[in-house]
Structure formats: C-alpha cells, structure tokens
Amino acid sequence: MIETFRTPRLSAERLQADHLDELSRMHRDPVVMATLGGLRDDGETRSFLRRNREHRHRHGYGLWVFRDERDGRFVGRGGLRHVPVGGADEVEMAYALLAEFWGRGLATEMARAILKVAFEHLGIDQVVGFTLETNQASRRVLEKAGLIFERALIHADDPHVLYRIVAGAG
Ligand SMILES: CC(C)(COP(=O)(O)OP(=O)(O)OC[C@H]1O[C@@H](n2cnc3c(N)ncnc32)[C@H](O)[C@@H]1OP(=O)(O)O)[C@@H](O)C(=O)NCCC(=O)NCCS
Image (cartoon, rainbow, N blue to C red; front, side, top):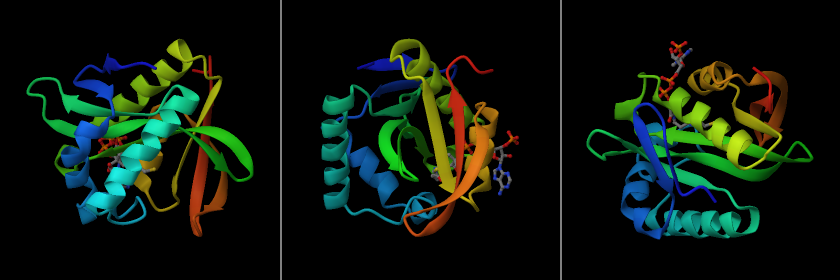
C-alpha cells in the first residue's frame, strides 16, 4: 500500500479511522453528496471507513485523504476501488472535494496522481471512471486525466457513463 504521495498542490495520506471527523463533515454536505448517492450520517461514515480498510487489506489499495499542502486543510478524498461494473471486475478511480475547493483544477491533479500511483507503483493495468451522465464536472476531470469514454450504463438504478484508461496510454 502506498501510504503517502504528493501532487503539485496537495499531499495525500492513507484514509484511516482518525479521519472520521473530517470525512463526516464532507459526507454531511448536501452540495458535495448530491452526485454521490446522498448524505451519509456518522454511522454510515464509520461503515465507509471500515469497508475501505477491509478493501485495502484485500486488494492493497484504497482511498487517500488529500490536504492543501500549504496549511494541511482537508480538501477531499480520492483513490482506487475494486468494483463490479456492468458485469466486469474493474478498478475504479474515485474523487470528491469539499465545495470550497472546486473549480481550481484540484480534482484533475488528484486524478492524475492517483493514476500514476496505480500504473507506476501498484502495477494495475487499467483504470475506469464512472459517473452520473449529468455530472459534467466529473466527466471533464476524467477526460482531462486521459480517460476515454467507453459507454453509457445503468449503475445503482441511474444513468452513468463509463470511461477507461489503459497503462501506457497517453
Ligand atoms: C466533480 C468534482 C470532483 C470536480 O472537482 P474540481 O476540482 O472542481 O475539478 P477540476 O477543477 O479539476 O475540473 C473541473 C472541470 O469541469 C468543468 N466543469 C465544471 N462544472 C461544469 C459544468 N456544469 N459543465 C461543464 N463543465 C464543467 C470545469 O470547467 C473544469 O474543466 P476545465 O478545466 O476544462 O475548465 C467536484 O465537483 C466534486 O467533488 N463533486 C462532488 C463529488 C463528485 O461528484 N465526485 C465525482 C463522482 S464520480
């Protein structure tokens, strides 16, 4: 497992139990959670942390917390998850930022760094991203990080779009 890494403006650290308060703050924000399946209360965030820990033990990767490297403020979370998508086992790249940090290219920075970790350090051969069809900002992040639109699909009962990047592309 990669414990820490950096992007030009952020530092990343492995998501763990003592991030509960910071993560809960994000999970209680309706603006952020509108495209992530809705609000999570503190109990659900504890379960989220437990599932991420179990996932990390099983697969050797998971989510990281990202901080502003100038002052250490919590910016968001992002990382890699092993998921079944449209009938296949995939490694998904995920990211979410507190709304005050949107619109500065930070999600793109996170996405590029996560892909570098996946391909150069974890030996993963391809990564997908999927998002609600209507989530234009996330679609744009996937495109800027080099993922290519593959197809539309229904996920969690809603229309989504699936993007993919293969190691060595771009
Ligand atoms: C989606 C999200 C991660 C984007 O974060 P961000 O730091 O603002 O993203 P970036 O600044 O790196 O890039 C956003 C891009 O989307 C574009 N964009 C933003 N809103 C848009 C909209 N409504 N329509 C079209 N493009 C849009 C921006 O202009 C930018 O593209 P550009 O650089 O070509 O101008 C952030 O909004 C978020 O955390 N949302 C809630 C969680 C979420 O939806 N996560 C993804 C789940 S799959």
